[in-house]
Amino acid sequence: MTVIVVMGVSGSGKTTIGTALASALEVEYAEADTFHPKANIAKMTAGTPLTDADRAPWLEAIAGWIRDHRASGGVVTSSALKRRYRDVLRSGGDVWFAHLHGDREILAERMRTRSGHFMPVSLLDSQLADLEPLEPDEPGAIFDIRETPAAITEAALTAFREQA
Image (cartoon, rainbow, N blue to C red; front, side):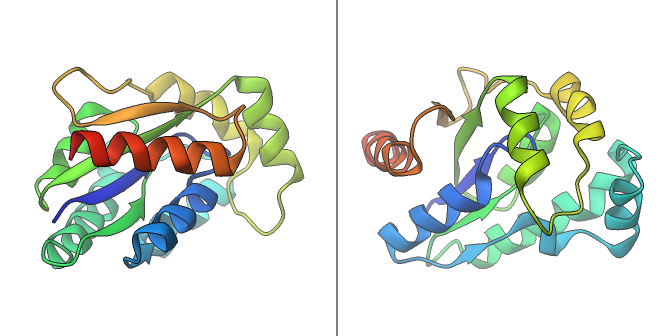
């Protein structure tokens, strides 16, 4: 079965949409942040962007989760900023990307007003600089974060069912 990867920069709503999609599809949900080594969390909390080397074990762990859910399907979040990161995720199995995309000002405001998350607003620009949009050969669709979570979830479900 296909695993949906809800992707986007910090503040895009990955957790909100991911949990809604998993609930609607009645599949397991996994939060990407739980796959990060403690050193990555410490680095980001301190305002230091992760390197590709920092991200490698995190991406491999998510790919492993995808591999473990090939029979059941599932929904997992991941910033999946670069094509090569998404290639690692695809190595775990059949995936479909729901890319949550939005304006920097909206993203920054969301990051400023959420509580309990380690990612500081100061890292948003580095994430936006690294972000490579889905390419035509990558399965998935892009969703505007200005829409309501319910509208994004419904649009993602529709697109997923049409393309999967």
